Length: 101
Image (cartoon, rainbow, N blue to C red; front, side, top):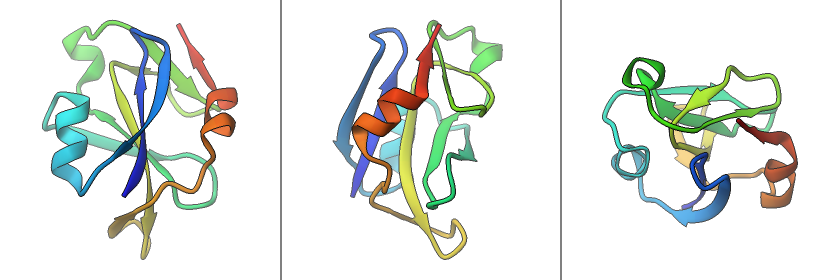
């Protein structure tokens, strides 16, 4: 399914294909995942739950969601977050809503 990988070190957002949570864990680089909704269309931002404890370099923030340290993955969800689906947010829209620091 279609998702976006956010890499704050490179200040980049790119489309990636994933098949499930294991791919998200691999892209983020850690097994401890947390997620936050971004917008009302069911898209979720997945990131390392312990990102600030690990001291990952690079940070980003989407809209008013808490800032994240390290990589993140945006993917769609269905059935109240029970299953993953293609991301619905457009890539340009996400780029415009993301700030790197």
